[in-house]
Image 1 (cartoon, rainbow, N blue to C red):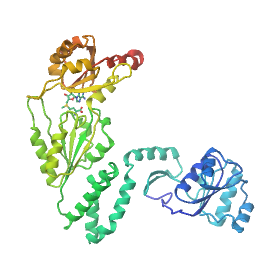
Image 2 (cartoon, protein in one colour; image 1 turned 30 degrees about the vertical axis):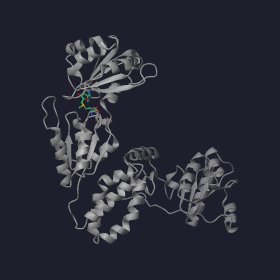
Image 3 (tube, protein in one colour; image 1 turned 45 degrees about the horizontal axis):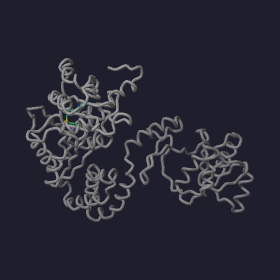
Length: 476
Ligand SMILES: C[S@@+](CC[C@H](N)C(=O)[O-])C[C@H]1O[C@@H](n2cnc3c(N)ncnc32)[C@H](O)[C@@H]1O
């Protein structure tokens, strides 16, 4: 396919660039030149606010005259202004724009007349700036708005720390070259490194020290081309159900995985986002009969990582909130497997928001308790006395089967029977169902409406805010 324009990156440090015009458009173009380190001269009888800002910060040289070729040539010959490398004309006087264009054509200086593609030798793209990583987007001047929309999407995909990442890679380039003699070997080394935990350590956690250790270790392990290295594990919170509630980081790591271990609560749409060739292993658990015991899941992760695989462990909600993520992480640490935890939106946050009420509110609740309604054998019971007196919004996970105990436990310790209660079944999913009652009607509501897990029981005055937050007071 042909190219309308050749994208190149110019080094403009200390290079003279000229801008004709002092308005907002001219100022925005000047800003790019300034960022690129150019020496910027501006010719304009007056300056607008934005250009004045550049002047006040000594970023431009201002010539307060109306542009004329004669004046410019005189100034150049007197050495007052060097011949520019690039020129931009951004005035609302077309005669001036055309004169600038003609002057540049005659002198062979690349020129851009703002918003007039036919008078442009070059165009300035929309950029995603993670210096020294720079992504330029152009529609060939056809739709600057489309270019900005694409830029906005890229902004969300490219972590802010990619500049730091590029700098670090640059620092180790020579060392890698000295250690791995073949081009193919180096390519493989960099590809392996850049598809692993290292990237996230630098780019998103700002953990350069640990990342450097990973790099050095990978370099030491890379004596033989293609040698098996240890894999890694990502414990990813997939959110409560709506696939859009997964984080960018979770998605990025999921798409790097060779194997995906997933729970019953993970939405199929999220699983679909893994690489097509990634192996998918279901490790879902059902109450009372564990499809795969927790220990086996943890061991499976360790074994897969030891085979050099990148393992994504997808968990519903957040891995560290009733997700047994810590137990899995513990075994990974014991086995020296690099891992990272990606937080997810926990069911309490997702379900309450989608059901239309907050978890805290200045007037109703200053704190939240996340409580498991499913007590492990031998574990201390729920402290209903404390909860009933706390004023917390209480969110019971896995509480449906123990609803009777929750209801009587809270009422016996003094919580008003009229306290609002919400049950959110399949929260944030297309089949979400919200049932509202009060504490003394909790159990009868579950029976009457045949409510089944996964469901959250939320108890607290904040639920009454729902009325105010729903336009027209309509609820599902
Ligand atoms: C083992 S816990 C996992 C919690 C998860 N780690 C989190 O942060 O949301 C499972 C319980 O979370 C709650 N839950 C998870 N997803 C839910 C959803 N979409 N709707 C309602 N409750 C949900 C239910 O109470 C379910 O029994």
